[in-house]
Image (cartoon, rainbow, N blue to C red; front, side, top):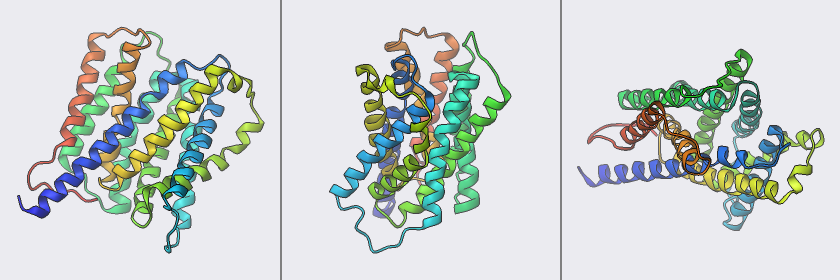
Length: 301
């Protein structure tokens, strides 16, 4: 392998590592929500995540001078990316409320890599390849196996449609962010997009109860979701996305349910069934497969 090929390999592996780290932080979201005070509304949780995360990200971008650029912002791509992030919150939490955490999460997260692969091909000309297809198949099958052990699974058609909308919103956000990262610093991209998304969801603050946010546990949960599971996670994801193809980045995001499953076992006292163990193994194998590129393998970023 020549020097250029080695540098490209190192770039991809670094990008994969950043995206994986982001997905691990996202995987703490479910556990944090489980610890929230009673009466915490999903819409407020989503709006609070975006507001706190956006403010933190904007502070980071300003402190690093990331917003100082002579290049004009692609207004359409920026606005649509913000809309996608805002609608992801609404679609996802609405889906979870209708069809349950397990089904809503698996459908939303499991559909995102497939939709991202299609959008990446149609809009960017990226060809994910057979390795991505196999890795995605393993990871999505693993998500399905994580779902099967549940004893009280509710399948609600409108909820499934909302979950698919969440998966499409996340996939579209990723594709559009890839476009923005070609001309602007990662810190600037996520700061602008998340602050716009928070503004889009601002009406939520005036139509829901907020008293639970004043409780110490509620405040700690929201701070964790906003600073760790949103600001830190998406900062890592943006840097990783700048170095990796869209389809691969979203497939690696399936480390989120793997992390959530591990936390459920270790912190929430959930039991590990054989099907859950097999599902987690499938996800891990899929992530491992996509993380290593064969010599001479070509990917478009």
